[in-house]
Image (cartoon, rainbow, N blue to C red):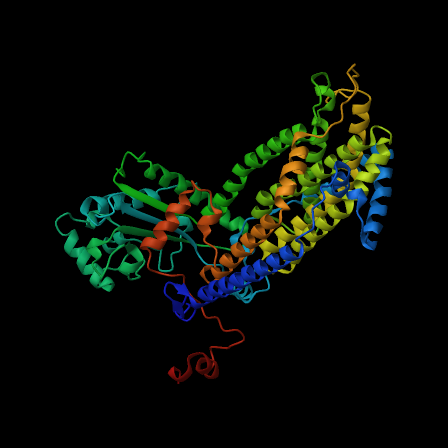
Length: 622
C-alpha cells in the first residue's frame, strides 16, 4: 500500500482500531460477567427452600420428542402439511418420481454440450464493464494487444556470490544462441518483434556485445561490462535500444552491477487479437519451455547449469499451469466422492444382528445420495452453459465439494428421522406414512437452510468480478437443485429401501430374498450418546455461557485484525505447489526492478492539428 493507505495511528505494535476493539470488548465482557454473577446469586437466593423434582423417563422422552412441541407456528405448520403430502406422494409412487426427475436432469445436462472453461486471467478477475477493461479493449482494438513476453532469470545457486563472471556470461551466450535456433517449426526470428530492421528485441546483458560470442573476450569483458553499464548508449545491441542495467540485471545495490545476483533475459514476440495468428507463437513457447526445463535439470550437453538456478515464464505459462491444477484436482474430487460414498453407506445402515448385515446395509441408498449430488452439479453446469456463462477453475474445483457437503448432511437428517419413526411406530404405520411424517418434520428446516444458502450464494451474482459472479450463480443453482432432488428423489429411494428391508431382500441385489430373523429396532450408540451425554452437557447453563463467550471472543479477535488484511491476488496462490512459475514469481519479486508499462491514450483527438497538439502537450507545443 501507498504511505497514505497505511494506518498512521498505533498503540505499541497494535493499530488504534485493533486496540480500541480489544479494550472495548474487554470492558463489555467484564461488565457482563459481573452483571450475570450478581443476577445468578439473586436468583439462587430466591430459590432457597424449593426442592428440584427429577423428571421421569417418560417426561424426558417428552421433552426430546419434536412431535410433542408445546408451540406451533403458522408458517411451520403450513410447510409441514405441504411436505407431508409431498413425502406421501413420492413414497407411494417412487419410480414415477425418479423417472420424472431423471428426465428433467437429463434435459438440463444436455446443455453441457456447450460447456466452456474460462482460463484467461484477465477475463476471470476483471469486470467486463470496468474502466480498466474498457480502456484495455480500446487500446487493443486500436494499437493491438501488448507483446507476448518471455522472461528468464538466471542466478547462482550460492546466493552470496555474484552471477557476473566470465563462465556464466559465456554460458549465457550459448543459451541465447540455442534459443535462437529453436524451431517449432517457426523460429524466434519469424515471431519476434523487430521494429528496427531484422534484429529481434532481446533484452539481455549479452546485448552489450551485440549477442555475439566472438565479441566477448576473457581479458577485456570486465572493463567492457563496467563501461557499458555506466553508459548504455555507447554499447547498443542489434535492435539499437540502450539496455539499462535495471532491466537486464537483478540483486545489486548502489549501482554495483558487478555484484548482481541474477541475469534477466526478456524476449518480446508479436501479439494479435486473432487467436489463429498466435498459435505459432504458442507452439514456439512450448518448445522454449521444453528447452529451459532441460537446462534446469542440467540435461544440456553444451551448457553446464549445475551451479545455476533458472526460472522462467512464457506468455502462455500461467494459463497452462492453471489448467494443469484443475486436471490434477479431478482425482482428488473423485476420491472424495468415493470416500463419502463408503462412509454414507456404512453410516446410514443400522446393523442389529449378524444375519441381517446384508439386509440392513444401505449401499444402494448411499449411491443414490451421491448420484443426486452429481446430478445437481451437472444440472447447474448444463443450464448455465446454455446461457453462455462459462465455467471457471474455482467452479470446477470447489462446487463439487460444496454440494457434496450440503447434500450428505440432509441425507443423514432424513434417514435418521425415518429410523426414529420406525423405532417408535413398532411397525404399525406403513412405509408411506412414515416417509410422509419424516419429510413433514424435517422438510421445513431443510427448505429454510437451502433457501438461505441459495440466497447467500445468489447475492454473489451481483458482484461484477466474473470469477466470483459465475461461482456464486453456479453454486446457488446447484444447492437449490440438490435440495429439490433430496425432498423428491431421495425420499423415493428411501421408500424403496425401507420396503426392501421389510421384505428381507439383499441390499446390493434387491431381487434376492433371504431368510433372516426379524429386525431388532433399537437406538444406536451414537444417538444414545448424543441424548444421554452430549445434549445435557452442551445445554448446561455454564457450558452455554462459555460457548457463547468463546465464539464472541473469537469474532472480536478476528474483527480487530481486519486492518491487517491485504488486498490483491497473488498469482502464486492459484498455482499448483510444484509449479515452476512459483520460482519465477519469487525471482520476479526478488530481482526485477522494472514495473509494467503505462500508456496514456487520448480519444477523439486530432494530433495533426495545432489545437490537438496543444491539448495533448500543453505549453510544450507551439
